[in-house]
Image (cartoon, rainbow, N blue to C red; front, side, top):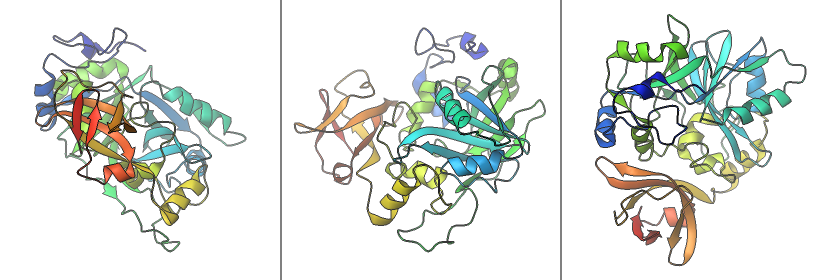
Length: 346
């Protein structure tokens, strides 16, 4: 993937030598504060996939967790691809412009999604393409031009069939942009924001036209933590089911849409019990200078009760981490937890 032009801006630093977007621009804490008001984040490392053809929405509806057959043009939503046992395999943002359904995923996750979709094509009139080389995603915080997200309430266990409207569980208002691509209202950081898909060659000029301060992906990911928004590949492991993430359940899973791969597990957990784990935010005591690495064990005494996901230093709350914990631990505010040499509190 081509290195973003915004990574060449003064002060820009990549997280790794092979990074294609800026991790920060010299002051991550200031960039977090800016992002709570109005700033632009270069997320052009996300994988972009298109699905075209007359059957695209009904076909995606049959394969994924979201109700897509009635997705209106210029509307966005979220979807999950689940394993036969209900574990999350892919998380994707969605936008349909009337002729093309755009899917965006975490960096490196697009290949698995395309592979799954391609294997499920059979005789359906759809075409699938990876267009990451031509299109890039940006995020702008504080933009309230588009209408607020329309989110359906999660129904109680054993709800009556037909209770949920036959529509996506979250509907993000959107519009097409003059030079192609789209704007999609989102609530990814627990605040107003807009995802923008623009031609990759126009990323720098588009950012300049907006005239907003730049924030890196470090700031963006830090603000995901208190919003309890998991990222595929960091926070979601091979055992994660939708109910373990209340954020994803409310936005990406329609509980009354009929059969799809993994649906039996989703329905059984929703109607007969609670998930064994749940996402939570931890405060660390600051003993260690750097955040713990993803995958670091979280212990209650000598017992491992979870692993660290995204972890960072928040501009107000100090060192925090997103984790998926055993439910009994996550529901106990007095739990005594440790991560390496640091004490951690829910």
